[in-house]
Length: 90
Image 1 (cartoon, rainbow, N blue to C red):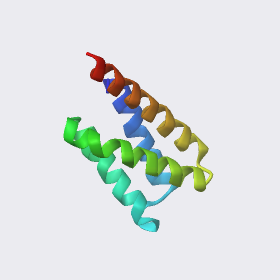
Image 2 (cartoon, one colour):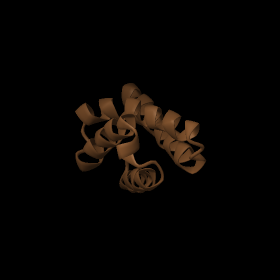
Image 3 (tube, rainbow, N blue to C red):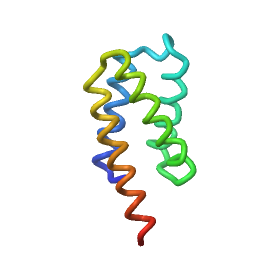
Image 4 (cartoon, rainbow, N blue to C red):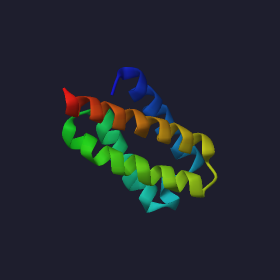
């Protein structure tokens, strides 16, 4: 993931924390922790945990009518999937 995408992901996490306080939902806490691990150290081990965390947080955001957060998460997930496909081919 490029640096710009990491910035967007980091801002999306901040927006998520403001809009959906983690203390109100333990699933949000787990997702944010996995995402922050990846932001701090974007390595393959954390990338494997990133995709499920993004998808789960996307579902939580959608169910809470947090459509801006959901859209950002969907976009980041698509980019991650495209990057993963490209690296499989190379």
